[in-house]
Length: 386
Image 1 (spheres, rainbow, N blue to C red):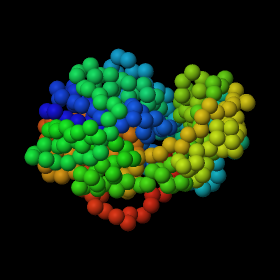
Image 2: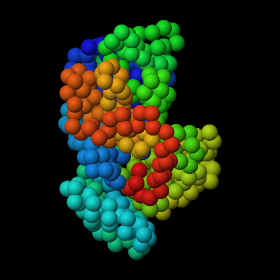
Image 3: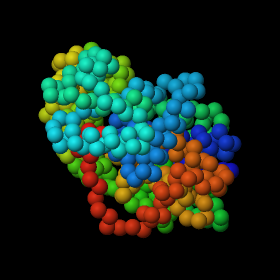
Image 4: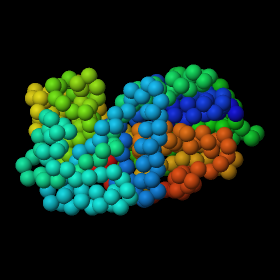
């Protein structure tokens, strides 16, 4: 089959790889550059926290397992699977955390309670606040370096003949004479099928195709789709895993740098007005980092970015053909880092064999096509929510 993939973030790269491995002739169209969309501004934490309904939780745990399988092959420099630590800061937070852990235990998700002393054995420079007695430990979680993951996926796709056209903006997609047509600025190109892996631009392209899939507004300041991510200069602290704490989420970003996130500060995130890396928000993030980890005294940010999440309007993943013709396939999800390799493989199987994948049964685009007036999504404001 001759298949086009539009978008070269993690979903596009994964789908291109899986299709190429199966022998398809793959052309990828990328408007700007690889990683130019949501994949390039992600906290990139692999997990299945607060992922409801149960089918969404199961999809995310399968996504984590897919990462593990891919990482078993040589060259797995993109996945760090060292776990996550989380605690609460007040009684309401403790109640939320206890309920979350109980739910995960009931789903056989690996999690246990540890003491602050044990947490400091895992993270020697950790500063646990007075009064914290119980810390949730998620040993199978981890984080991803998105650029390295996309390089791995796309590199293997190229090795098997996938072609990249960049810059190449897809203005529209349609079904013509039993084929899928991609409209470009310099003409059109026909394929047996097209995969839309366009993240927060999904609604616009599906609308042109005649099957609008509504997405949460990625430009709405303070909404569920936007968040601040701080990238520090190198710091002399020992951290090898994710921390999701009441006031700060943090993970390593390589070469002594950290990514920091304060979910309550996301209420001030505005893509049209990104904050300064040495302004008030940056100062608060660095102060919180120093409260959390020794060795971060005097820390400063190299950049402070506004991430824009690709979120279907009901908050759940979209994966499937837009119509019964089997020509245009859409992929969109807020959990792109966790789910990317899995969704790419499952989409390729459905495209090439026609066999429906059970894991995707609850996430077909038909539940959303043509819907309007859906309530806005609640922003994540507490540790573990995002």
